[in-house]
Image (cartoon, rainbow, N blue to C red):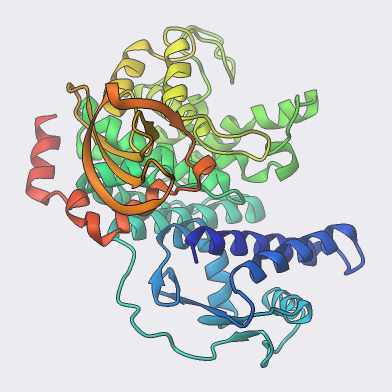
Length: 455
């Protein structure tokens, strides 16, 4: 039973929750969502079998096994479980439709009592052996996503931002990112279909922190640019989802709505007050201003964007290109770098693009490669000046899953780069594999501080 099956179940559950909240039971949207969610739940168990999911310390487990990727990508759903007092759920096949719909209705408050008996049972037993937990880096990631989500909800509801929790979360994320190196870039490949803006913003922070270290910024400057990265799209929180996820050409009204998010975000950040927020506001305002002065918002005079805005602009586009959206598939990391290079000197500062490609390498961390011998590997690290890669083999030439094994790869051995989703892999999940613990060892703080001081 794979983590991917649990993610499909969670995704179906979120869709069922959304449609049940909006429509009556006879509405096609409700019927289709319940049917898809029920099918995903049934796929977790075979006839007469069972599956047990538990939530503890911001992490979820399947039959005592930590699910690191699902813990991050579905953090808000896990929070809903805990808010309703659900610490574990046991699913027994065959799962009945009435039990599934009853569980959904309980989660959204249409039923006051949890399901009792049946094929879905809540808090029936305490699972043992939950001694694994997500890393400190992942906890910091979750904290940043949660703080940004709450800030966005407050901005959308009350029209104001409370930035202190966000800044605290950024400070912790910067520390963990600086100490984790390869793990932080691998973690930045995670995404959430339902909360794209929040995850994209935190991913942008992780990657820009690595770029800031290469540029030679001080720690205070790294925190400042990290805050700008996390908050760069905060102005989008009031934009309707149907506009943000529109699959075709935007209407003039939709484009006007989208193009105002830099100003809206910058104004909200400045209105929140606080020392150092001016840089975050500048990043929010300028991250769509191009190197050649075009883009938006329009700058009347030829004023160059702040360096931090230009850095976030490069990373923002890279992460957006490599993330799957409802209206398009993700680009491979290598293809995203090619598109950045095409925009160097027009859309982007050419020196920053050069540094970014130097940092990420020809095949950035998280790239899924098919080697000439047919094996499938995930890139986890590369040398800045060495044409070799460090990767983890996950499938053999016959397509069978194998125990993760670290190996060095020559670029000449690469036959093709494929998208992670097309082969059903989650690169970010590798940082929790016990067999790879030494690969993602935490950098001692003294060495980390020395690197920053040296620039």
